[in-house]
Structure formats: C-alpha cells, structure tokens
Image (cartoon, rainbow, N blue to C red; front, side):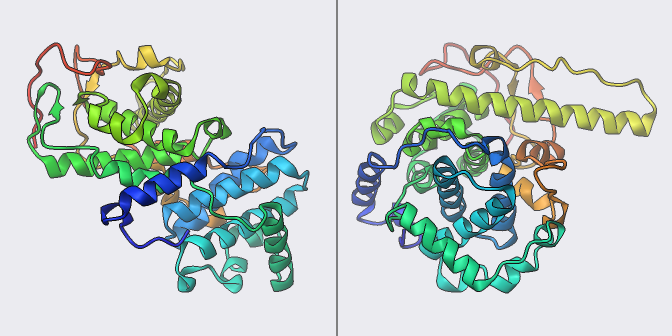
Length: 357
C-alpha cells in the first residue's frame, strides 16, 4: 500500500484510517488448516530476520507474513517449496510497501546464509512464477491491512502530558513516549509469532499492543477514553488479545532472568537456578510487582532478530531460533518496586512515588 511517510500526521489521516478499517472488514478468511502449521513459526522468523537484514519497513514484514499465512492455509506444499513461498511473499510485500530501490534483489537473496545452508537457489523464472501464483491466489489484491498499518496512527496519541505514571505526573514526557514506542514495537512483533492473533482484526491487535504497553509502563488511565474513542475498542474487547501478549512478555522475561542467572552462576560457580516454569494468566500477570523503566529501552522482537545472522537459522528439522529466544537473550531484567501491581482500572486508587527521569 503506497502511503506517504508519516501519513498519520497529515490532514487526511482520519480518511486513510477509515479506509483501512473498512478494508480490514473484507480481509480473506483464515481457517488455520495448513498441514505445515507447525512450521509456521520458523518461516515467520525467517521473514523477520531477512527483513531486518535489509532494514525493511514493519508493514512490509507484516504483510509478507500475512501473505504466507493465507497461502499456507490454501495449499499443501513441501518444506523446500515453503522457502520459495516465504521469500516470494517478502519480495511481493516489498514491491507493494517499499520503494523500488529497497526491494531485495535476486542475487542478494541467493547470497543469504539460510539459502546456502538449505542448498536452495532462486531463479528469476521461478521467483516470477511464484509471485504470479501468489497474485492469482489473492486475486491481485495486496491491499491487506495488518496491525503494523494501524499502530502509528494509534501511537500519535498513546501518551499525552495528562497521563500519570504510578499515580504521579510523568517526569519526562519524551522519555515515556520513547518507551511506549519500544514496547509497542515489541508487542507488534509478538503478534507475528502465533497464528492465534489472526482471529482478531488487525486494528484490534494494534490497539491491544498499546494497551499492553501502557500496563507494562504503569500509565494511567490504563486504557484512556481518548484511545477507546480513536480505536473504537473498549477494554473488554481487548482483554483476550492483551492477555496473550502479556503471557508472551512474561515468558520472555522469565527466560531472560533464567539465562542471566545461569550466566552469573557460570562466572561465580554458584548453584543452579530453578525457575517456576509457570505461565501467568492475565489476572496473575497484572498482580506481578510493578516495574520501573529499565535503564535501557525495552528490547523488542524486531530488534532481537538483529542478534542472529541469517546463516544461524537452521531448517525446520533443526533447532529453531524463535523470537522469544532471541528477545530473551538480549532482554535485561527490569528492577521492580515491591508491593505494586499493574493497574487494570481506568484510574488509580492509590499513590506511588515518582520514578526517576
């Protein structure tokens, strides 16, 4: 979808947004019936890694994964063919979302480590044939909104000066906006990792990413009226999607703490660390100790992909480098403030000390 940079700040932003909302009502149905559904995570990671290798825009990456999901839902193809399909989806998404000079070239794609490790070689004729098959599958319509198409429009009012942090005025509005953007990007990448999120409309997933980010950052109201009005989603509608996002974040954080502790034990020769291994429900998660802003920006999954080279991603039959593992490796544990909980109400009923800017 060819849109100008930062369209959400223009005079026709509301019109573009309404067009996207209308278009998402006509998205193709997804049944989750692919025989290779268990390989879906691997190929979503592959697309994300290559996207970061070429520094492609989020909308191109999300559209590529969505095209892959729809194609897998309709065809039974071999694992080797899925590599061709995945790269073709990415190239096609780039041709729709990116400038022409940013579309990955055939020679560059063949030079990727993942291609040589799988003994795969793309030909120009084969790539064009697959692109044509994809276009025919989607009736030559690539105007398919994803959560990435909505997130920036919502982020424009995600944090305002009147919001509170732990019940107190924000010490730094710009710093809070920075963390909001980081966490929104992180949760947006989380939504790529599980086909479960395809049961929600893309605009709802984008709204849930913001809601989860506000909960993590302890901003109140948790879901302010302005965001409910802009998105059209009350908190009750967002709850199932937010729960899934928060569980993924909780899992990442536990894995990061576990790996950090294991590294410290190796250095200090201490006893092994044992984690509880329990996943939190949304109610349990919202009662976890509250966290201050980390010293470093939140590591989001698109960034975490950069820690892997394409040559390190093995095929579906070998170890898979998931985004969760990647994010966990680079995420640092966040300092906590005892006896605080994530707010779920629209307003705080208590006061808390202000965080340091």
